[in-house]
Image 1 (cartoon, rainbow over the protein chains, first blue to last red):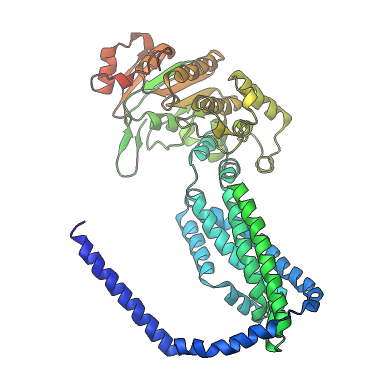
Image 2 (tube, rainbow over the protein chains, first blue to last red):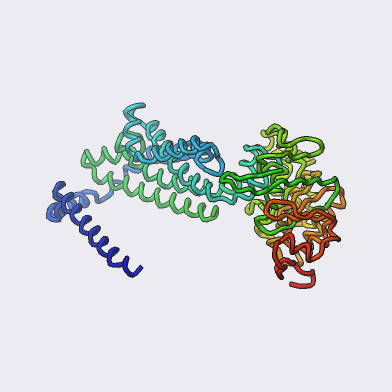
Length: 257
Length: 251
């Protein structure tokens, strides 16, 4: 241990130097010097000034897009949760004993997870056209990946005792899953589903930026047309909705665990 | 009967054991002697690599997977760590003993026939914990949890009860309560095969003792004939204090 310490220190220094070099190289390439930010302050101030007073008259128009945004999140999350169920069981070593199925299910979950949700949305807009349908599909796939990965990992950590007891009592595979696995994993599954719902609400607000439906599309239009007063109202409504949904979801998850 | 595990470890060697209906047999031996393996080859939770398991004239090693599920339904099993679903209610845990006989779709939907509920309640009543039916399993004491485990096995209405170190995680008084429960089950005509480490419990409750050492049967005879010297031979060492559970009054 004593001899290992100086080596560890050397590695840390080396790592910090590498990070600094990477940072400098990247900022130089992008041209993101502190000076640029400084120069940008006046136009930022102008933008913020232009937002006041907020255009509350835009509020009634926002109701339908806001509801649609939340509907995209709800439908995407529920579809994703349902579709993740078979993958959760297949990607858990203690439930799926056939090695190749287990590895295939895990690989699929990992693959789905590598693609960011907005990229899914952009691709799906190209496939199914502009609108909320693309957003729903994107959130569905994303939800499957996250809920599937997290829940299958929790599943692998459950107490194996009840499974042995059910098997010994003559229960077949499905019955064993229903009576020994489901009751143990259900709270985690619901908790992860709500967690993903919280993420999906956030994502659904920006889905509009790639044309996948929701209130984000309005924000983009408002900014492009320099209607900053309306943009501020959209931002405030988004903020309020996210805060309320998070608060409720966190409460429910506390009850579950 | 032989059981060899992958990697060449031989858990059981030439075990030849015949248990008659209604017997109360204690299998004693050190941990690692093959007691758990022996019990699990009977309901084929462990597959024997050679030899046969006879159950009511049927060679279970040649039974189909479906037939094996039926047979397991007739063999109750209880465990050292109780193996309950801790977050589920006591009644739900006991009903799990009925799902073997239920059709798969009814089991998945949780539609238990009225009779199953009555059987489960009767099992709880027999063990004196019917008032705990709707309590979460993890809210019970160790002894009560083991009785839930026994009730679950009883709900199967089994012909044989396999008990794998059922009192190893319990204190002495509770151990005796559970052993008496098993004796009563035996009195009702159910064959009991129990793995025990504690020689005083084996002598007090079992009718017959089977000594296992290194996967081989080194003793098989009436419980009353086994003295300390015989136990030392089974264990291959001098007896120690923790080979005895102790009387009820202690602890």
